[in-house]
Length: 359
Ligand code: B12
Ligand code: SF4
Ligand code: SF4
Image (cartoon, rainbow, N blue to C red; front, side):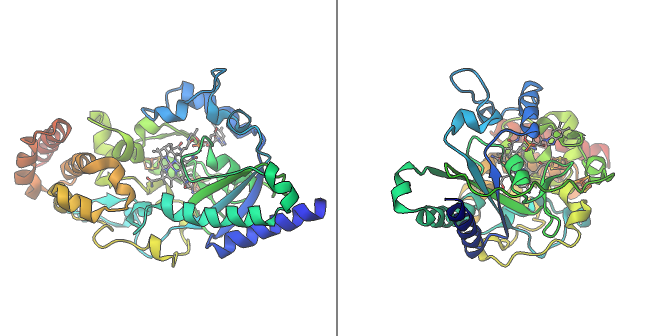
């Protein structure tokens, strides 16, 4: 059986490459020291309103704290990673006060959940085919991109895909951190890889560059302060003391990755799904703010940007205009301040006062 396991492990890795993944590796399904931080993180309230991260089993234990609770049958985790970087500037290089920032991962033509899951299913199928037929009835596999009860980055580290950076992102020495992750849990005990060593060293650039001080300490992020959370996940009003730090971000944030030295030479992907849609790199704020229901639907069909909904995107655009220092937005903000959408109107009021104060 040992030879067979070596063979299946090789089949899985070849299948990952054939499916277009840039990196893949195998982690044991066991608990690790990093997972011990998960309950502390939840208890400190760092998940904000993302209640799904707090789901518990019948014993009241956090599901994501251990794979043994949600998939006791799992022996290995296949972790695959794909580069979504494209050849466009970093947010830290763009200063046009009429324009905002959509996070690099969200420019894509296809929602990454679908694009990565399609590929992952190919790897899962190859794994299943590699197992001798008499063992097939006992074989269990499950593929997840984001949505499974698993802290993917911890397993990515143990699969050797990359280390967990101080900004909490998985970084690969050759590819950088512009990576999507996908995981396959399996009841097979595949040959594990070695964990990726931490190469952050004494660097603290991401912590210093974060405009809302969301990285409380190395490897510890408070979602409540993170612009990615505020612009994508947070519904309704955004706390006033964080708005200034949001700058001109309208969906997600890339700063702690833009400043990371390991992304200086990050390669660009050629996958068609991850190429940028027209208008999304450094988009015009007025365009986003004035988008009709119809245009929002058309522009963001099959895009991860749908998650914040039109209401969230316009709220974010209003805050970004307030931070732009550009008084030309005042007439548009007057209009938005009278909108029936309360959080939009309130954000527009704030933005208007801020622009007037700075005139
Ligand atoms: C919830 C979530 C978020 C939240 C919370 C982020 C966070 N840091 O936890 C928000 C909305 C803020 C977010 C933002 C982003 N996300 Co997100 N997110 C997730 C999701 C769904 C769950 C993450 C989770 O469980 N967090 C809980 C915390 C506790 O886990 P963690 O940060 O991974 O922390 C572990 C380690 O840091 C660790 N640890 C390790 N060493 C040490 C040492 C010490 C001393 C301590 C204290 C802790 C510690 O402890 C934790 C585990 O217990 C995952 C998908 C998944 N299912 O895993 C995607 C995921 C992590 N996100 C992803 C991406 C791309 C992003 C963004 C880049 C998007 C954007 N540009 O806007 C940003 C990045 C912001 C950042 N710096 O992390 C990718 C990450 C890819 C990568 N290269 O790492 C993932 C894996 C999705 C995917 N399938 O590709 N995300
Ligand atoms: S994504 Fe932006 S706000 Fe969130 S930790 Fe990184 S730099 Fe800070
Ligand atoms: S900026 Fe520096 S400390 Fe932060 S993740 Fe990159 S290498 Fe690590």
